[in-house]
Image (tube, rainbow, N blue to C red):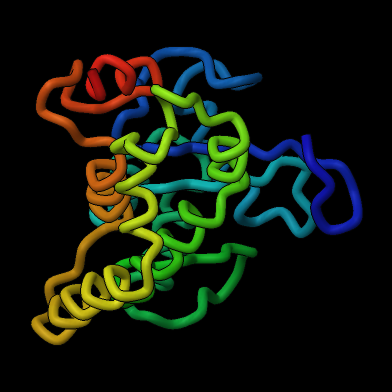
Length: 206
């Protein structure tokens, strides 16, 4: 539940539409068809009680609605989404905020992601609670990686690479940027799954 538009509403988050099984319970909705029907209703109701945030590949998004022929309002929902995505024009009806992340430049995605990661308050807590011979000590590889990633020189050079990707029309999704930054901070070949955790640091330093 959340306060949206001056009143309390139910907010449903579908973080991966392509991984949504046909059967199952999704909050108060029993099965994928019931969930899609609720989404369709939210598209066209003037003041819906339920609103949804959906993350999906654009092709899968349209394909899901095209295939849902037995779900009420799916054909109208498909037309609405197609108008926003394919024709790049406002939909003729419905209240849908559509964000096509593939149109955001790689350099902008990098800037936003780095700002969010580097400025997180958890890093200051790590400095405050640093262990003398372990996690976040001056020799700690996670701390060193973080300080390198935070440096203007490194960030500037990394951004230049992403600007080159933009110039060559090589779009990279946010999940790949997150993977890259996670590996820069935590990657280590000697740790489980090649990812460092605080409990690994003392052993690595020894």
